[in-house]
Image (cartoon, rainbow, N blue to C red; front, side):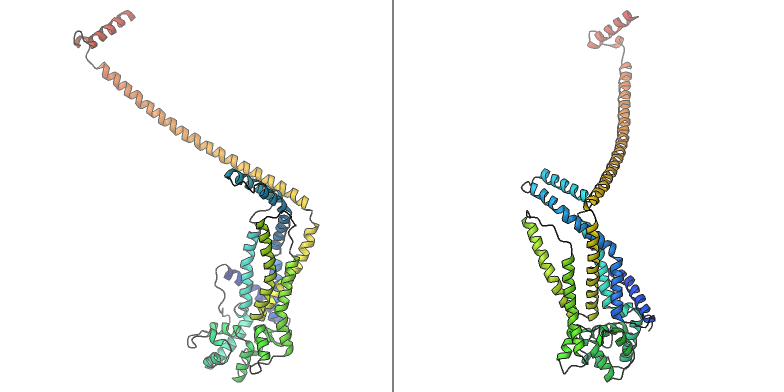
Length: 431
């Protein structure tokens, strides 16, 4: 069963990124195994550091955008205030033009921050998939789970496993049609203390020691595959299977608490908007919403880390610590930057862009004029053709007139006879 893929994420884009990040995680784990410390917890910490360092250029760009946005917000607010009561189309167009000029002055785009977030979000979701499906992405861990799954399935113990292991029935609907890969996912999701107790009761040793060694973190027996809530509930439920110590409970409680604290520190370190006494109602509402979000997010982080596997909580804490360190470094870097010089450089870049746009517009106009001339030439050709047709028609009329009877055949006293007489008179005098 070596080299089995298990159930990797198949979500487009996120699944592709997860496969790449999973390769990084596998390399980290193998390196740790070579030096004698093959541990998922250490792998998660190193993995998080590496990924966030790779995303550092995007983070710096985003922070630079936030810093410049904070500086230009008073100017943007002044423009909005200027056109506050002018809703006609011309005024709105003029307001947009002035706001675009401010964006150009500071060298930022209205969608700059959104684009960077759109790039980062799939990476963060892929990170979650790798941590949550570790046996699918790290070969050695997958092999250990495969050995345990084969021992249980080949021993005909699936029904007993489903009935005795807590939450197993949630994931196992049909014991006769479950595949090895699917059962490994079940083993990775249920409380591993229950799995260990089940394996000991049925004298199963295959893969168990390796999984315990890979998953234990800081406190012996504390398994990162278990959720902190299950560790605490097992400790206080004396009838529950599994041996949980007070140190394991302390670590289980520390994970969600540290997650909330590190998230809160992240919020404190984020760049603050410059105060503006002329804020409008919309800005006040937005500021209030952001303040609420900053208070709620750490609490949500604590809740998720308490109910989800401890490995995800460790990743969350590691990510928050790395982001906090990055933020401190970036803040010092941004403080050293002379924003006025940066604005001047942005003005030069903006002027070059505008000049290039003008050149492109001039080329387009020249191209349009060439097309117009071509169209004009076609029109002239049509005119010449029309004139030729008119000339041919006139010639035909003349030929028709010349083929009419001469004056001799005209009726005496008629208008035609008189006209012929005048014509003959003129011809004689003109000779």
